[in-house]
Length: 449
Image (cartoon, rainbow, N blue to C red; front, side):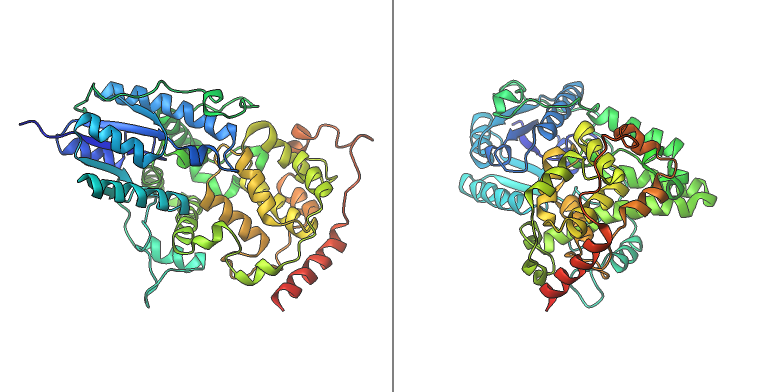
């Protein structure tokens, strides 16, 4: 008697290489039904932007082709995941559902519903750790419990050898009778059109980006990473967000380069540290889900932000009169991406110069970024605002002028996005940095008291 089919539920892991759930389903020899469910709760969320969904659709187009090449067929459904998976299992006679775990609060609640449904239907669920290099609970303090400061977390993580990436299946035993919908467009998902060009998406693109980065910039990463005009970062963040490449594949490439070129180890270690930051913020979100709604350090929920809408609008539109801030915000608005050094500068400026809640900035980023990821975005914003896990919190205040002098010394990046910077059209600064710095420190001290 032939084995019953296995449903592999794709979520934020839109690839066929080093995909733990797919690997185990294919290795079982059973027919495999790959499925992606468009979830109305995610599509209707306040931070779901058209940009990111448009990128997702292109990633799904690529995944569809890759699965077809292996002999599988991607089934697309729209609805509540527990209902869609139930009906898919009933239609196809599938007895197992495999998927890779997630750390976000909504995802965890959704998965609990799916587990409950599976129990009712007599289906077997297997959920795998796949999202991170070191899954939640793997990197723990000696006394037990999670780390809440990055440096000791990183030190402990690097002492644990990471898993090698899993090979992609050589072929899939496909199932033809599963019904799905055609790949929808944004309008069919009740979203606005995407307002900017999309970057190339999909697994092949991600692997080529990694290859190019390893050849050109990985070995000099620490020297060039902070200069936005150099465009020397990996640009893999949207691909890690949607899982068109696994973080283990990226880590393996970095470790390989490190072994081949001992002279470049210090440079490469800084890039590896960025991958560990990604794990750290995901671990924080898993262990302390309250960060999705408020400050990691709860005393900072008492900060009396001024939250002036006119200043926020000027920040969003890149017309604050601070050239590096304006160039960064225009890069975000025009491309759906922002260089990491600039993310720190604009976040510090919004919270410490304009005295506006980090949550306003967090939401704006999520609406505009192709790589918008709850854990990384929230962690970065709370780091900049001083409300997060950092050991040296609120008194770190970036001076936008000296940051520009240091990281865009020739003004080339600013000129690219703010061509009017030296003309009379360019506005005067909307606040006095020195004065706002004093006010910000007072505001934080009051909340702490």
